Image (cartoon, rainbow, N blue to C red; front, side):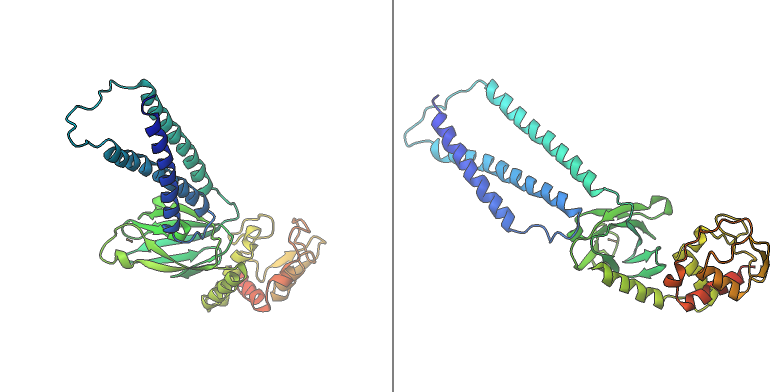
Length: 340
Ligand code: CUA
């Protein structure tokens, strides 16, 4: 074939330029540091796209420049160029190859999407509220609110995004994933992130939202689990109510008491707390006891000691002596006393 030599040279040049452009793109560090599990499949997609971009760049530039130089008009040559009437083989090639590439990328894309959306049932929930112009982070598990987002390393966090005014967008470039925060409680959006690198980052608003949009950023601090736990403890201490009964209500939620003891008079696993304080309680051995402070304290610390008539023994675990401090027990008793 007449042009085979040119195709071989051009092919070799395309290969070389592709490799050089790929190396250049790799060394430009176009992406910030990878700090989340969700970033890994996204970065892998980026890398593959950069390779493809390098190849397409080489394909066009090499063919063009090669033709400019090798097939340029020589001095004194006034003849017309060769005439071509289509080329079926070439047309099939430039249809099939891009088709395969597009199908491949849609497959890899779907796979990456699946990976970034993967649900961890153990995820920690944080309610994120965007407003003009800042962010508020609420940790319902601990009852604390912060203007900075603190996260433990290697634990998935489920961000529940909302806005008080206009559309904002939660974006930490190091985590790669991004999600809009929409106004209205029917439009809460989920975003899952598993931080993998201890460090300080910034959440930026990625949706034009008014005058100070550019300054709508808050610190994001990823810590080791132990450091995060002590931060939570500090915040909880600082945000405790002054009223013992209110604190007791907080402990009842936090330590799971209300899973078995209602405060509205209905019986679930254990006796209700409503109207319990000061009442006469019949135990399963037929004796009666007044539900005073000593009785409640004993029931918390030694749950199987005095079982109320009609309830099963051994359901409440005897773990609260270790878990609760003396102040917390007093708060709980004050809370039960307040439930008339
Ligand atoms: Cu909020 Cu831009």
